[in-house]
Length: 287
Image (cartoon, rainbow, N blue to C red; front, side, top):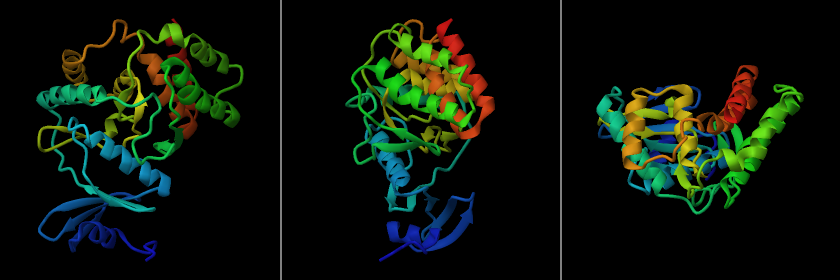
């Protein structure tokens, strides 16, 4: 059966087996659905089969650790992803501390390699609406330069968002990565797109993570992304994280290095304002 003309309600019924009693459109792609018996689900129209599969596989891979809370996946196909709906509350200091401990445990669950995709997830995945390739590597500095910095730098230069004369400062960071990266760390299980908008503060007193770009990476990259766009009670999150899993000396100085990846992704997606931030981060990383 071809489901391409099916709406969010019918999709939710197909994956949960429950009749739909209400639908509320939240955005162009998101619909909140109330199911028979009062349970709720979130129905998301994906940007193609690969994007849906990447997100579903990422959610399951994070959930498998039993650490940070993520919405359960009810089902997905080439177009739709149906998940549990998270009732939201307010961020509190206690929830922030729990989040820090749970995030440390998530990272410690590990990954087979830097760049490892979640089981069942595609190699050609996404971070937001930008392509992101999950190519495994054993050496973090080389992998980060080749698969997380340079592809976006090249595209930004091709698009004219970063001028060719400005690219060398970022290329220099890549050349110096072995010395800038700090002590070697095992691959961590990353959420991968950990900005504030993907952290839902649940009514249950826990942070819940949505919209992952999950892959094996350096745990400081997730933390640097939380720094980049702000996060409620960030100091509490980081203190609890470090009590659970101490960070290597100099981690604060490496924040701009790890922000280079999300900033270049944003440069490709949203343009010039982020190009300036990416260049500033590169200069700070070299300082």
